[in-house]
Length: 185
Image (cartoon, rainbow, N blue to C red):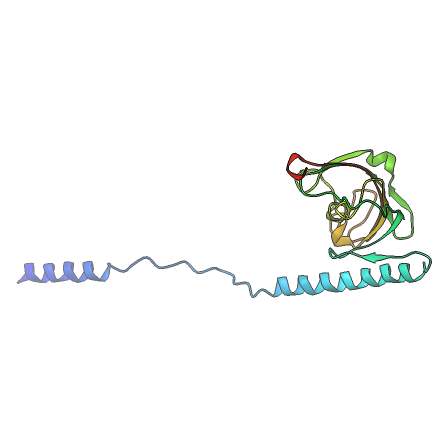
């Protein structure tokens, strides 16, 4: 009898211990409010920068400003109205540029940035996204001044000892040459 009780106890313990693994639950659960607050802050920042840039453009009625699909504004200093060729993905371009704040104070001069060689959308070169997008709008020999909101420029990082965070900038770019890739010829 005692032996039967031990067998029953062992069987009961065995069945009770056959519980499957239990998933671990996170200690802290995120509600997603951080992302919503961040998006709201960025939206508010963009709107204030847009007002600054729009005011700058309104105070310069002699210049014809264009708006890009990428979220920045620009005007032609030198425009080629005859050519239709703009750089395509894989094309090599050679250009110079500078960076100024919206008041026109030089942050990086053409001398500091030097002559740039860049493959459209294929280079690991550290160019701000505004310049990468702006180059695609230009033709060989053109000079264009771009007005970039901070998210298209140096954004949160800025430039150490030269430009603070979230500062809109302007950049004058001269596109010297476009060398088509073999795929685009």
